[in-house]
Image (cartoon, rainbow, N blue to C red):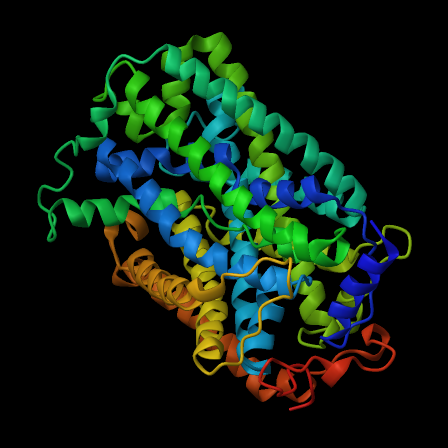
Length: 521
């Protein structure tokens, strides 16, 4: 990487009023690995396949290309933003740049809470895999009790979160090495699994037209069942913005980050779609109870046998570990980005970069502790998997909307300027892609939050506040958080002196509209 390229990347950073602090050590594969490890093909497909199949039958597979098409619109917008602004805390800084300080804070707040909830959700995947490898990992009861599975899931997840906290606290190099090795192994294991499943197919691809009568009794017929089942696919294909969030630690990020975002999403779509399709084509019976309770773990053991099947499940376990690490890393970078704008409590401490580890240590610890708190609240929640994962996804979608919507407004008003020649740009397709991204984000957010017993109150006793849990929780986080910001934090907002560019940067972080994005309000 040339000194000129480094200087240009640093100059882009000073547009926000920041001085370069994080060491640029991550290459193109590292940024790709960050995006694909957050998406994590094996984690997502193995964690909620059981839910998708139970709610929509084999035909739920069609939600996979549907979600990909919608998320691709968002990813294309993000790729254009990453080419223009490769900066830590991507969603936060982008919304601040496109909108104003208030929109930026809300987007950052929603994304930060969503990342913490998502870390807890990903860590719960240990429960869906480890007891399938050996019953000795079921430390709480034998799994038959009402709360055995949920409580044991919290225990296993706690161990994983403690691990990701330590790795993130000890520096970006250690994180990158583990992440890169884990992603390489996950990609190899994914291809091997696809080949093994393909060898054992017992039915044709027409299986994806089978609804298994899951639409019976639904108000919208199979459409209602399908929309519920789409949660399983929506859970997988997000987090690609992580490649851009590491922009301040990456080499030539304005070129590498856009490619990493799109490659991560496309690779996940192709490989994950093949796994789901071939699993449905190769499982011994489509009426086996294990399909809607144990999911893909059941399929792998059924098709490949205990020896090979358990070997693949160990690979899934590594994928879950790397995914949790990537989610934790993204949350740390976001907390750092907000803190150096003095936009979080104890900001000066949260934004401090360890001279030894070259990483913000305190945010790594705080994020880990808050994720553990999310687990503790849900420790006796039988439907812990669908509740925590669904709420995490909704908040991610809301945060994404707070980027794509201001971006659309900026386009319409002629205030959006893509990166220069040779960088990624949507050109004349920018406006229609942006419109589709906003419509998709809003529609899917509503679908995911819809008060369904199947998602939020699957087991009795049934309560209205559980059915409406997504609206209540997300609404409380959004309104409560913004009320705190408006009454307290906005009066303190501004780049901390120790993190400011020597000359304050062009406009001290001014947005594309020319309004100060990180100035005192």
